[in-house]
Length: 561
Image 1 (cartoon, helix red, strand yellow):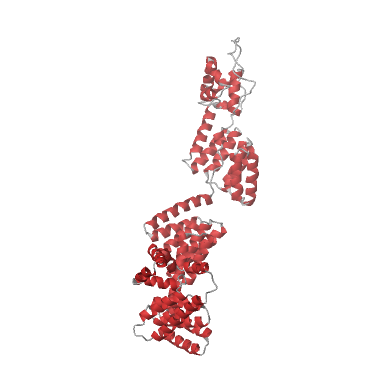
Image 2 (cartoon, rainbow, N blue to C red):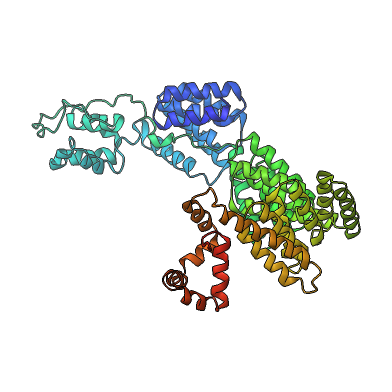
């Protein structure tokens, strides 16, 4: 453990009144840091608490030797001298301490107590001013207050401590005196009746008495702060001033406070992250990145909260984003999320990745090279080299993703390679880019025919025919339609192997067929068609009903004789 850690544990032991353990810990701390005056001061307090005033004096002298202008050292030495009965030396020590710190309340109080003890002679002040209150609060001593002669004796001793020896034969006075010295009363002693009057006798001569030991408040608990601890407190205040200036957008003022805070406490990584925020607002992105990297290094060294590390990584990502270095921004956003996952950082990562893709596409966009790649794909397609043709069409799409022709041609290759899902997707993309692109409908119908989705194939052929306003592809559309009808009639005529349940199940998976079957009007029409075929013919005059019936027939739900 470090000297500071040992000191902290020593303070805890002192607070628990485990003075021997505290001395042991302070001794180990001194071995590590023999120039730390606070350790000797705390050691002196421990020895004084054990009433080992000679050792307390030795430690206090060492404290003053290491730091002559520190008032607490003189307070420790004065307390030790007071405990040893050297009142005049204690008074001189307190006076010396007050020269260094004239407003020190503890030194003033201790000095007044020594002066009072010297004024009252060798007895000092036996009973404090509040002794009657202390007696009233003690259950064993409280009955004494009901005895007038006892109260008179206490007041007499308070007025003239020299009378203490004359009343010392009174057990009540002895018990109170022991209570002052030890804080407890002899259990065998207790309230007693006033003593019987005695014959006057020659008052005994005053005996030599050692001055009372200093009261407990002369030796406060060792709560002194080291210079490092004081600097950390100052650093926090400077950091708060920096935060206030930042909120007011007084960035230069904020930087001054953050720099001062860092100078006072170079272990607080949060100071650097706050400074980085100011640099970011000033658009000093390179300095912001460097400051955050320093914060991460310091934070790792001192094991700070992972959230602070994540914040530093996030700020680096923000700076790289502003510098348009998207790869670096993505890298540091990911590092930030590794430390601590937040919705804000995750959104920044996703947005940056999308922006990167967009910029890459924009940088790669070249219609001329796209046309060239598409033509090369066409040549490969004619040679039945469909795989390499797909590669060329893909390159054409990358160069110009808005050209529907490359999607249509690639769909044709995928169909030849029997990659039907990919072919269907390209057809739909082509149609979304140009809803009048008839060739895309024809190729989509071919894919649906290959998948034996005859109902969909017929609908796509109808759409193709609708958009073929010039009739250029009429023959091709008619050929595909005829093939589809033949396949459907052949399936019905041959009595397909699949059961009616399987047919209905497949049809129900089609949202359009499911909608028609669930329509109450269509349900009524279908029911009437079984009872009255003539009514069914009337219903077919309605174009919407006819279209729905046609879809059900194509799906195999309805079969004709």
